Image (cartoon, rainbow over all chains, first blue to last red; front, side, top):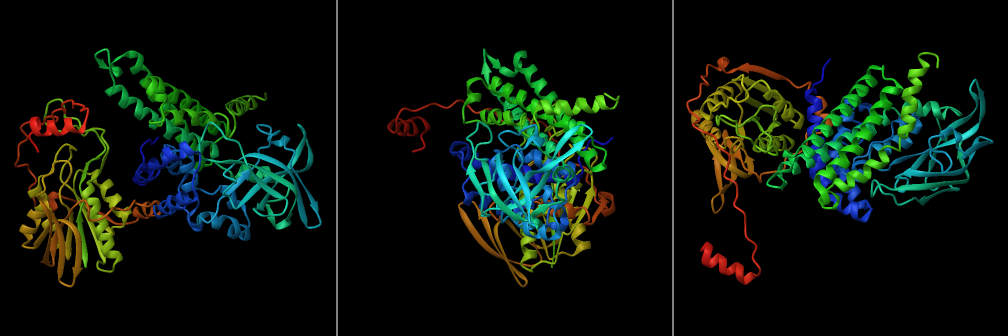
Length: 387
Length: 253
């Protein structure tokens, strides 16, 4: 076993952390206050992220990415995770790995402009009536000649407002399986401006201010057959093969955010004096710090191990679910306790803690709720004994 | 032209420094270490000279413990071409004194024959501000310290120096030793693709003995103490009150 970072990984952490502190932190307060990420700010930060090679770092070298292994990529995500999520995600963007599943023509048309920072992708899966039960989706596509015609509504679609296109997952029929009938799903590229495709503003939400979500409507939206990503009816397989370690990405983000909250809590506990001594001398505070640090470390170890196994090809669904579940629940606890240690000051916008606390809430919901993660973990246990 | 840039591994400037319990020095165990920020500026300047076509090769050298190779890798990831690590200590708490460092660097200069040595004006750990000057003296080269701008034309370098009370511009003959100040440039990030490439760049490992230099300390640290804490300030109610206090109590106006 090897728990140390390589020279490269240490430098990746240093560069990313230095970038986050120097370039992203200064804009956090304004983005949080306005809930808006201006396009000229995005462009400015994007150019800086590209110069530092941080942009599209998840992509392989042959398409212009940094070619990071999963563990190094997760370290990068952890450092970015310290900052406001809109700044983190949009200005230091990484195209979805699923774009690598495209044909050479699709890569040229959709992936490369994302890597060059000319546009962004967005994934449209969730629907008002289909959340955890994705296969229950109503939006559908029917073949018509050599085209497909898309109808339905998707919501909670992240940064669809700035994306140049979406990858829409649509029901394209039903098949019988040993466990009953199951919807067949197909993934389609749909360009902005395609007749019948409308992007509407989504909801204002408590977490991730400035990171927009949108409602996507498809009304007899016609796309040609070459817009199918992967094989028709194999949309889920494409997603499962190519979406990769998104749960680990969420976990890594939580690690960075929790580390930042813990840094604040430790400094405050060492400096703040009440009843004649630093509050860190009171067990009520110091034991909280010990528990926070221990929970953070446990979540880190789960995440790094799953990331390492991802590259060895030995990772299981349960490994990734455990990392996601532990890291998101750890963040909720660490953010909450960091505020408790700060008292009233922890709730003020002058510190990033109230933001981290708000942001923590969505992490237990998206990319699979905590309940779905527990389901995946227990299913793996039970299936092993025929249950 | 070849440029030699010495880089030192020092306690990270963001770390809150703690004095060891026995007062023998600063506690460096499990503390984040980084490249001396002035040396980063020197590396950046060397890279810019290379980008302008004024330098062909950048060689970085670090003297100290084996872990200094991390510092060298960072310099390589920023854009240096080659690295030399001179291991001169086993304990991270051992600081190699400026004269020994200058002697080792002089030996490296004899071997490498660079046209320019670009160094940080001082390391932020001990703030000696001596190595560059000693190196120039040992080599019999010209020196330009505290550089805030550097222009090289042929066998001359024009250097603006940040001195007390203003800026001084001097011209020195090449080869020369230039020590750089804070405002010379803003160092770039070691970019992710360059970090990955840095591992393929050569890093040669030597020892102080290879150069026949005795690095035994000549100085004795008597005592290390934390700086005295600042006294609490006072709030003044008005500008008039402030002026009165500055006049009558502080006596500064």
